[in-house]
Length: 276
Image (cartoon, rainbow, N blue to C red):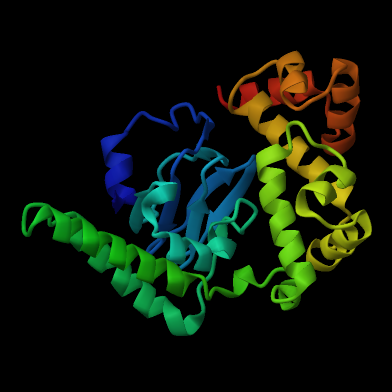
């Protein structure tokens, strides 16, 4: 754990000179306490204002902007640091598709800031107490912080009212399965079979929770992965097509153009130019 200002000071020529996109393997969580932070998450520039939180989750493509006046605590943690029972309670918050910018409930904002500063203090207190106690305190403070942050209004997504219904549960399980299998499974019937339900049940769950059909959700996930690989990872179109299960690169080209308005080559060139 650190602060945004310390991170910028310690990396004065990287990764924003020039800005270079990269794939997150940790959770990046930043509370902005002063100024304004600009940060690209999955090729979209996010503006994080004072008292808002930026959350970059593992698997997201991110790109830093040049240092500005932003100040605030910077928390970096691995996906498996949370205890299993806490991780289940935080599933909506840590989900791959959860919002990148969070505005906490006004009743929680001061508490969240104070707890974050306590976590930063404990991180810097290495050697002050036994190592096992130090690690237990850090994890306890982090879990308390995240459980309170899960109360953010931003997490009230379409269909949230159905989260406790069987259809809400079906959609949540579908999204989990999609994250594991989007490279090789591309049809609603594939996921219905995995979940042990009918295509009709899955389609209703998707419409109710996300306002989209199952195929649209699948295609959006594949398109997102294609943009990540063509942009941040620098893969060529043929390799991306094979990775995402397209047997014909031409079909992938049409798919990508339909979802982005650009050919894979044009998108890759634009991203490369933006990073120079």
